[in-house]
Amino acid sequence: KMIAQLVTSALAFNGPAARAPVRSGSVQMMAKSKALPFLDAPPGIDGLIGSVGFDPLKCSTYVDTKWLVEAEIKHGRVCMLATAGWVATDIGVRFPGDAYQGISSLAAHDAMVTKGDMLILFLVASTIEIFGGLPKVIQLFNLDAAAAPGDYMFDPLGLGKGPGLERMKLAEIKNGRLAMVAFSGIVTASALYGKPFPYF
Image 1: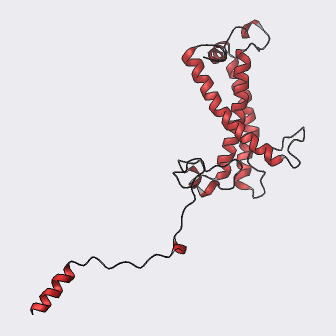
Image 2: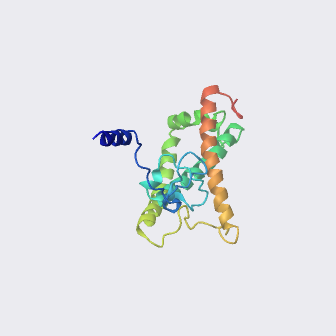
């Protein structure tokens, strides 16, 4: 009886049984994002032109990537034009006519609303979006053989052909991203400091 008690007491101090080692081949490690190495790389954007794994909100997990790419390219193109137009206006390029002289880019919106030109601009932009953008979105989601996001079959100079096409696509994505950041910074600096180009 005493021996049984000693054995029981000794067993009470033993740690839990060691688990069998896990084979290294069964461990699945998620690849890390190039842009944010502390986050897992989102699989939905892997292989896209210009992708560096930047999707901290995981938009690609619940939104079709065709829609995301189309939106990024369109916003990038708009901001490239907007940045060029904003700076051009502030260095002196104007429409002909006294009504457009001496107006900064920051004040142009209110001036156009007062003059009535904003309605014309709105109608032109709406027409382009309705007859160009809306059909493209419908095409992307309903046709298996749809043109790639951002491809509107508009290439009068034939630049979208040849071996340099992939490089040009990457350049457009990078310049569009830069323009989106740049335009935000230009507008903010203009509003904060009220100074002409270079806005500080």
